[in-house]
Image (cartoon, rainbow, N blue to C red; front, top):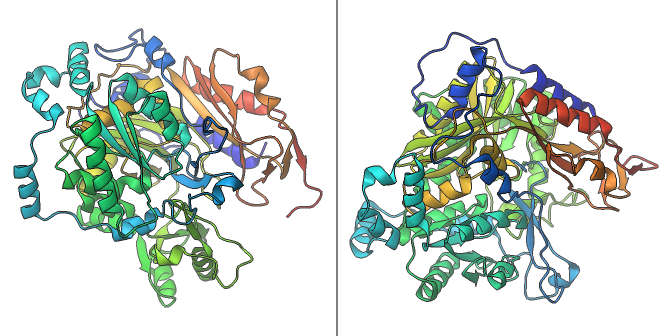
Length: 620
């Protein structure tokens, strides 16, 4: 297997963190952060699983194992066999859950679904109205009656409905059942489990998406209540189009209880719609700040939080100044999210100048297609074919390179307070592309490192001004302590939901639904992990053509393998890291009595696979 793959697994087995320092008192509620209590037990020598499968009100192991598992795209064929529009995952950011270029058959390109106009989300974001003023918010509050969920909550005992018990969960689910929730876009088809879970909980889902979206299948199945086709290509009018679509759907389905999204690109639109309609929401300013890396750094510095050195590059003349201020090694990147296009590590000023030229060229060639920014044609030296520059900020940022172990901290907030948080260790990304590899949960970092990472994640979300919902926070534990990479203001993708559900019995989908309807977020968590897991996305070892996908068959019936499934198809051209951005060939998730055993088991599976890629006769 590739060296990058081996180093990722080896680093995870080794722990990859400094020796634990003396424990200090945490500012976090131990009832909300089970990972810290468990880390305490591990460091005290209680390494064997403690027989305590769940706390009162938490999901049982049997319930957890029966939950739908999502990640890989599902069938998006209409009953007549026509392919519907679907989003693919950003090839570097599966765990973050960022959507990328929709997959559509050639037949769709001649239909009324315009690939360049069907979901230009960056254009949409640029045209959105500013957040409401204080006076406008007061007017909305006076004119808009309480939602049905809010009215029902007032009839219940607040202590009972906010308790972390089985009875508390039953009360919260009673309030949620029958609620009408608007989803701004469906995301890629691998997220259908979100709508299945909402349907299971009795939520009536209204989904806004492009006219040919795969989600219309869910309306036919009865999983969602209403599909509302929206022309997202009309960026100047999309806010009004969504408002009109929501009001018309609500007249048919019922009074609204909340507006939400599980798609990164749609968050700015969703929060503004919720604000306009007087429903629970985070502020537009908070969302906009989280989506601008430079602004996030400025806010964190002002709040006195540890922040990597950084410098904004608006002009060529700023390049040298940036290098002198930040130093090397460092990473150059766009200030706004751009699907990791233009994220490059540089080791000296000469490399920085070369990287600046390359990134600017890449960004000019890039195209916005159906809601995603995609890499342009490398043959297009002029950049004439690109359109991304019309819609996104081409300003760059140089930031110090962060060493150490990368983690995800998944958080669920209610009224500005974290009600759940847990760490997942991420294995080293494949450089220079920074695309993800694998992860394990619970964390094997020292307890103090986990505490510091959780505390920084919480303070980062709070200093940006967020108050409710689920957040996917990416950080590193460096030789100088914890440092933030970014705050994703929605649930992570790929294995993130499954990881938190398997390990800690917390369903982030359910908690985000609760928060978005204004229902208390109070998940009950076990004292020790329900399951200990590791997952890995295996990249191509050589460049060539994948002959078939049967190479996983012998592992799929293993009781400790939750899934082993291909991410590439037979006949697909695959690329190894030596030739470019690596192709993910398959994904595997396993469980074992201990996380160390789970990591070792993934390594065993990886070593056993004979992936049938016929090498290219000549490297590209």
